Length: 131
Length: 365
Image 1 (cartoon, rainbow over the protein chains, first blue to last red):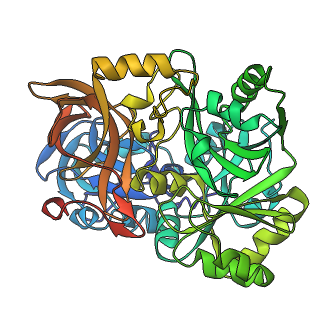
Image 2 (cartoon, rainbow over the protein chains, first blue to last red):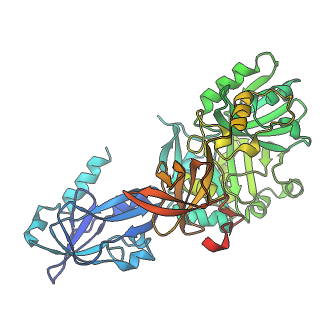
Image 3 (cartoon, rainbow over the protein chains, first blue to last red):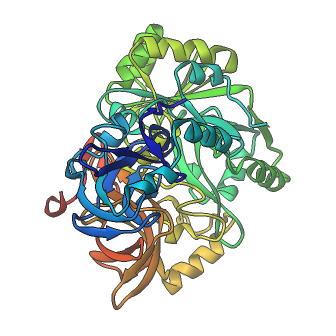
């Protein structure tokens, strides 16, 4: 079983979401998701100052095996993409919840985060998917 | 349930991620496909290829039979142990399978064919062999391990020290027998090394000895990127029963001389050659970032359209590369439709990498 930090929120499409003290949220893909995709070779991060709605595809992670969209978890404005991934896409594999973060978003309404899954629900979902 | 090779428990013990491959439970990687790729280019790696099908063909007229069955000409194999790559065609000139055939001694050839095509291959070979009095014997009790990379020869010799002289004398694309090992200096990576056929009871201990000698296990994921870089076709992707070898980059494997050798599929190939094939298989190198994928559409402005047959990312070149079937008029560049956008790619001649080094022209390194 992959690591699922308890302090994070999760989406059905395997993004993790971290609520920061400044009100922004940081988004990446989970350890489970990167494990399914395998070695990353290219990550396309969104441009800053991009308005995005929840469940909109805003980034792409490409492994040797497959390309996968990364979805915006909440309505808001993307303020930053992780530029380090351009030269080091393997950060998504090696540190999915840390250096491998994908984008930072300023949510329109922070309360939307409450609709996301907690760690237990996400763990139950991936256990279900394995069957 | 999926079939297991004699090395299944070894893969699990080495933390392999197992996947279904043509009905076999096989390792896709043991942690990192890219690290495994580099391991083979820089050092030595081992592949469990026991799922592949070994077929022995014996009989007084076996040479005549294979000269009919195969598009390449086994009469080219003058020396014992010499190997030949060939397509086996249907009467329409499409490819039933690609294979390696080793001429072992008068009256005995050994063939290695793909696992995904095993049943139809065996049925076809049996059907065609009637009238030649040839024994067709499948050898499912044999395992097969490929050891590939610049240090493969040295490390296999460390595991089989008594075979050192035999291995030193073994030329490229030759096979020899050593005790109950059948050792071919062949492979599917573009590196030096061996493909070793051995009794299944010995496979696990041989695998562990190789591991102790510093040979790392390599999964099917890296096997695919290695063969693609090396410019080697994959059956089912780059050619199939509806594809002529002349449109799959395999003209070099079709022996039309001598003109009086009748082989299955010869007439349609001659007709296609006279008419000029419409398509050819080329290499592509993506300009810029992204990954080329199987079945992406190719657009050659003013010429026509084509399709990627095998696309991936080249760990050695750090670029996306592919084989694509395109109109013969395609020259040095094309556009690839990727995720709704058109992205330019260079058209190159395969291989992309040979013996660890890039083969790309300097202008696109």
